[in-house]
Length: 315
Image (cartoon, rainbow, N blue to C red; front, side, top):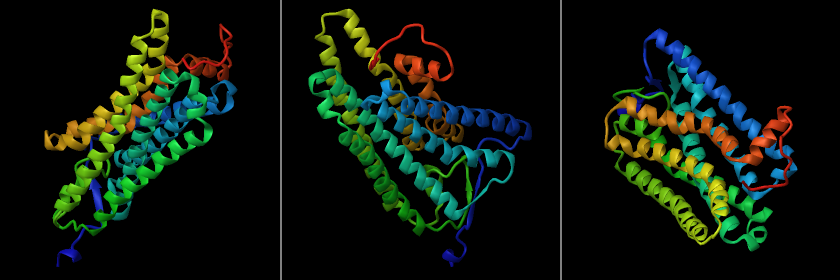
């Protein structure tokens, strides 16, 4: 019977089988993972230890850094293991990795939406900003992002436990992601795909709508400003967030919908690397370079004295 021959483990056949290239990729991803951990932990430490950064904007940024660490930790250690030793992963280990990917990725999507709303409140409603973005509301935004991520993960992961994998247990990818795992099943997956596309589209549209509406109001407000310097400073507060949003949404969209457009495993892996490895690495760099207050706080942490002493700023 099929249920008696269902796979109990999977083989992650990502990247390459060339030993030399494997060593090279192992060192590259190890360095990237170490830099991701260090960069995001520096951001969290700086925000926690600097009183000037105890504001809603940086509160949300610290949670973004934490989520970046989580996303990388779900995928990179397993990928490193595949490159240097065993490529096999247990059935439940594979399902768990899929579950945590859904959880962390969805939570980060809604956290980015919360950060867009924060910029809207700061720029468009400056007189009411403190009342709108109070501590309880900020905690609610973060908790809500995690709650939606948990529900999204639960709805899409539980049905996977009913699938049978009879014909092949080889995943042509470096991690157990939904688009790479489900096609291997020898049972009917129509309902699972429908559920996935409905939840994925709902999550994407809801979160992106918040970002889009927020920035429409922000741009409208900025265009009404008479001072060119005021416009520049206002846009600079949003530039780092916009860069992260573009990187994250574009790579995630192509990864989860790109399998319908292209059959190239290499292309799918590149997009997975972008949103699960490269973007968490780039986020602290982007915010450090584009946000003056964070840059100065990092210099202080590293022992450098800031050239200009300044008070709390959102730029």
